[in-house]
Image 1: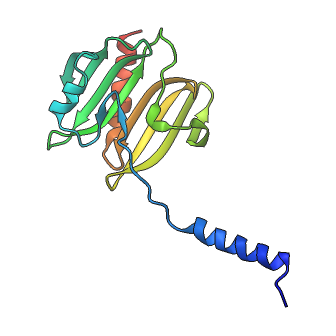
Image 2 (image 1 turned 90 degrees about the vertical axis):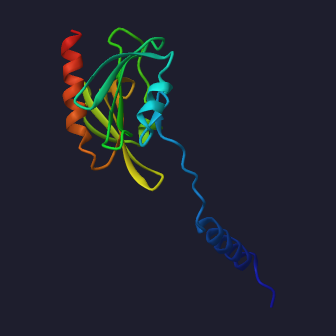
Length: 173
């Protein structure tokens, strides 16, 4: 007895599902903002901003730089760990510029959203070099972000970042 078309179709489908279920190698890309990534030595982070930003100040283990040629981004803030490597990086939107993007966040429609219009937070968890990173974007809406950050999970970054963001906003009102 020859197998009928239904039997052949079932064999093809089961073979295809086995092939499709096989693990796919995932290449990790470098998650960065304005050329700065976590774990990067501070000297390299500073060089990444050469010609793009001017140094404003350093206090409490973090540096604030003013963007020179990006009308949507006003500041870049990054902090270092004890090994003088970047432990977080944040960009702050220009108040009078075009909307700021958050490229590391990727497709905002698939990010975890909290808050409501006017005060929204978007998050995505990613792996880079075996480390779990959190990408956080905040703003009025996904199209009108006020900040974009990358941090290592458990870095104590959120409190530092929120405090600095509030200080910068209150200074420039």
